[in-house]
Length: 268
Image (cartoon, rainbow, N blue to C red; front, side):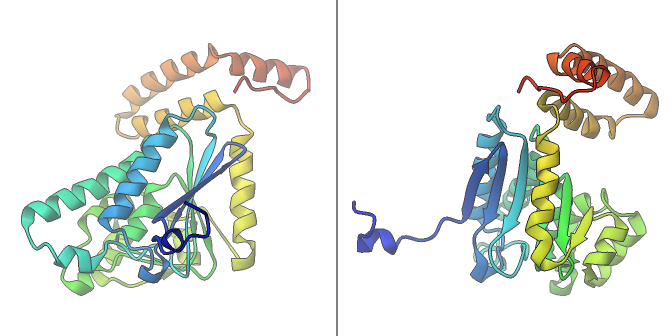
């Protein structure tokens, strides 16, 4: 079919856009008219792309962003109300939780680039990323309580980013916090003026991409695993991971480069 054929021009835009450059993959939620609400189809597209990225040995970093004026407004409420059954809701929330966890299971860091609002499961999406940088105009909330629904699954990720009292206050009041509060509370790492956000995130991604691929992959896996362990067990596990990391070519190259005062040449 010719590129300018009417049928092709009328086909719906993809819900998720992916680009990759120099080992940095960008995933863009692409439902701007719906404030990038997480429909079933969008969750499915995210799950498929994350699974594909997991197999990409050249991957160094992932940036998660959104088209339009909002980062993500949470679940698609119209879609949810169209199928009012316990089994449907349980499957939906478990599926969404699986996508959130798969971001942390990716072997490379994932950076949320946040413009506009991030509410409910959208706030959960930010909290599920390893790093987050927000425009100074961005706002965050877990606002399900306003609709009679406690944001239980978003609470899991939120309470692992901010303190228990702050997380609970957000959950029971539904009040928005601004980007500066989100940074102070630990939900995001950094904020930037709107016009500088792309450059700020790109610079962070490039710093990560320039590090040893082996060390980053060892490190991300270790970081999340040890958080679930008692301290003594965590230290024992970390020592084993670090010893395995030392056996990699990158570690020998990195140490030799440091001693020889030169730039390392990573195997990856």
